[in-house]
Image (tube, rainbow, N blue to C red):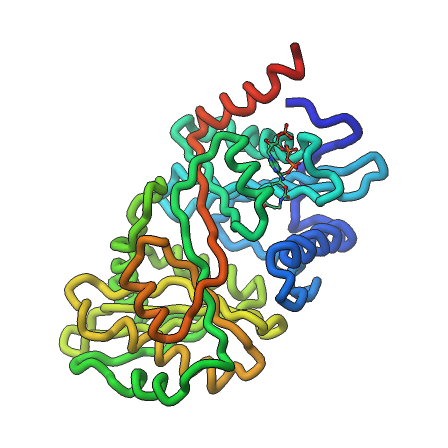
Length: 354
Ligand SMILES: CC(C)(COP(=O)(O)OP(=O)(O)OC[C@H]1O[C@@H](n2cnc3c(N)ncnc32)[C@H](O)[C@@H]1OP(=O)(O)O)[C@@H](O)C(=O)NCCC(=O)NCCS
């Protein structure tokens, strides 16, 4: 696919990019975040820069930047895959962004074509996945235009930490289900808990996944170390809480959060799960309440906890509602089989050539 007139597109390696190059991209990411969440304070540029440079082992990534005639940044496209996630070797992630003043000139499509081109030779059975939010309608319109289908609609929920009922959180934290204990793990999973964490993570596979093409997730020690490496390189703190069956020592549930101490506004709560045989005993609420209690005590400069849940995940949404989480926005994972992506781009180019 040819670039729109007046624009050039080239790949860039974020590890070796100059300070000026990376800051230009970081500035644009800061602007994009404000477009999506104008109510949030801007994430400091150094925080974004560090995040961009982070490169854990086994993460494959290509970045293309589009520049205008004055060589100013106009947009970027990212393609990524996780070589350590062997269950999901068919998944490729894509993120496309174009500065508002350069939109609707075909740059988004051209960047996407470059990202697709970078997947060449990796097999035809790939599925490309991208995320959009309803806060930025152009993203959804673009996803539709390239032929992607919504695979997993999710609700982004957030908890206003100033409004939390602390007495209730204390009550739920103290109501430990009999026969279980919690292990608090920060940043690095000690060798003795790797097995229990892998066992506990199994619960996440029962999460409703809509139509999205993800296969079951089989956590391995290599993946644990990979994530730890990413968090450290990106300057993020990672707190993991593990529920252990005291009789067998098996891991039965977990919840985890991450945040950057230099950008404390919103704490991200990632996975929470309890394995099937141990559900219905209050372990999920207990895990989340204990984590919340710790955040309230130790992160006074944070304002929100944010978490994404599939629209159809009734159990998790019910726990979150009880804790006081409220709906903030809708986000959607879009998917596009590789063959359809090529067709969509070829179709878009045909009229221009005619
Ligand atoms: C989504 C985004 C990358 C599109 O970039 P772009 O350069 O404007 O995209 P293109 O010009 O190649 O548009 C391709 C097609 O997408 C559709 N489209 C894009 N933006 C649209 C909008 N605001 N309204 C309606 N349709 C739109 C159109 O069908 C368009 O073709 P047309 O202009 O011939 O009608 C840009 O709007 C953006 O950066 N948004 C914020 C980031 C984001 O949400 N990215 C998520 C995508 S992974």
